[in-house]
Image (cartoon, rainbow, N blue to C red):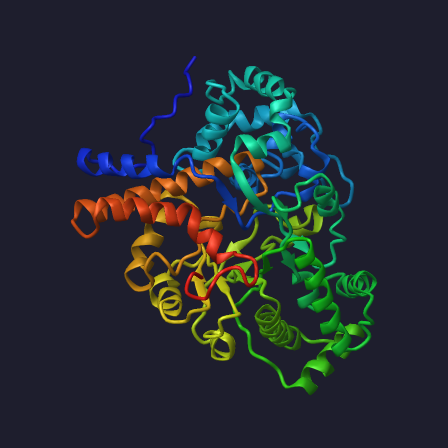
Length: 479
């Protein structure tokens, strides 16, 4: 039986000279605390602090990186235990789900998912069994025995992973009850929410009126007209800030942030309340609200994160029967320079405004994003994200943006995941890739090694601290 062994130099560059430098740089950062400033682990995981149910529901079912690869090879979502919205039959036996995953282990060769999963098995679960059809049951039982140990409860893993701060992502209409429980247990400064208003800003989506009603209920502000709607959004932002939120998160199709004349905004909002907006009006209103969100971030200090360029739920039947976030979100071309001009003209040099830009379209790194971050004080570039959070994707990011934006106009690494056990693996990979890039600069005599070590520490720890610092706690120069 093959044993799982992780090479200590994995993902470091080839070549003895550069690898030796990269190894020293990586060693300087590997023990730093993790700052998880943009993620999707549910706050209830930490508030409940229950043992994880089984290997399949921990490592397979919630991870769309894993399930989309299996689906691409003909495995139905039903066979992976993904619940149907109509209550139809799906696989409920976690052992069978796990066997299907292990039987397809070869599919993950060369993917970041394999790196993360191997790290989870070997480094976190302390298991040296390679997944495969012949080892599936043994591996399932070994993981089950680990999950039964108190050391593998979520709060214990916060300590084991050395997570200093983790941000969840919560809809604007969240009651934040789980975060209140965490505050009562003394974890309120370690697990904090992020304000995500997308369900309220896209007026043509299903259930928009229901979300607006919930907004009114939670804010205590009448949302019957446009002015009340904006006031209610401000009230919810204040509630999130009181709960410790550092940032907002906006997943629009495009980065368009063009303000409308107030009369047009009021007219479209009133039409939306009646269910009478056209697609063009809905898109214009979403862009207008993105501008208003920037204004609110300038006023209340919450960091604004924008990640456009993803056509979500590409397969309409999958969305209908299984809901969102099932692996069928596909990148499209993104444009930032013209789209963000209104926001950056208004707030780009304002010391109270902070904007972090993410993309899954790496063609805009050198052409648009690096030049924007390289001149506007408010702008930072988010880490390679989603389809680009891979070894080669992260290398390309450094190569394409550093010469124009430098290192210090980036935000540091964000793990952007629901898969809690993969968080240390993702940060470890980012630190290795940065070490390799910095080592090349050292070997090419473009950077002294002590500078490279300092920069690696900044990228891994200090820059996310500064980019997501609480309002008023960091100077504009530090940001």
